[in-house]
Image 1 (spheres, rainbow, N blue to C red):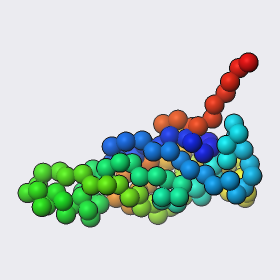
Image 2 (image 1 turned 30 degrees about the horizontal axis):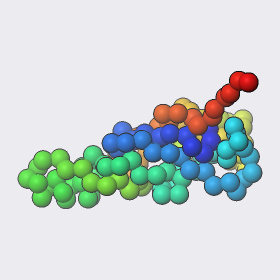
Image 3 (image 1 turned 60 degrees about the vertical axis):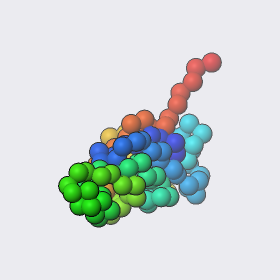
Image 4 (image 1 turned 60 degrees about the horizontal axis):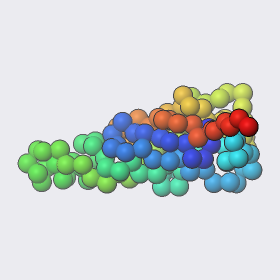
Length: 124
């Protein structure tokens, strides 16, 4: 996987791009390659529009204020652990490479997965 991959969260309402900083100098399809450590919210993982999880304090408060009617609030991902599983035999800068089967968990209960790996192949 590489920068520009499209991610989805099971508690979010819209997809978001995966952003990889070009610090490792390893490219895939001309874009920075991703590892399991590329899980930093607002740096690597962008917000998913609105959050639907009642485990998110902002959603819980807005829902309580609306007398129990689910009220989505802006998504701010909270990622406590790296992506798993990884490509065990492919290391990038000492960390296992990210694959399109990798997922990570948001502390608010969302499961973040890959919609599109961001790798594009063209034929001349």
